[in-house]
Length: 69
Image (cartoon, rainbow, N blue to C red; front, side):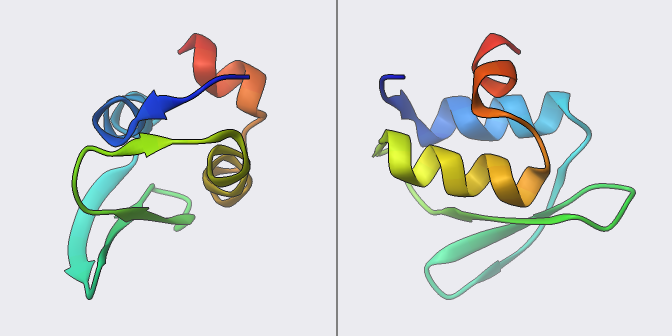
């Protein structure tokens, strides 16, 4: 598993039904209709494997599936 940009993470979250609700400090709060919450940093930096696993865990999806979306 390599790295992807935060821009790509946001695009994939949007495809999964997540919507950006607000910004909270250094993070954006994304929520889906099941009220799952995902916190994403501002900017377009690269997301490494460890952070990607955390984002996927919050979203309730396996990283391998998330990367194929």
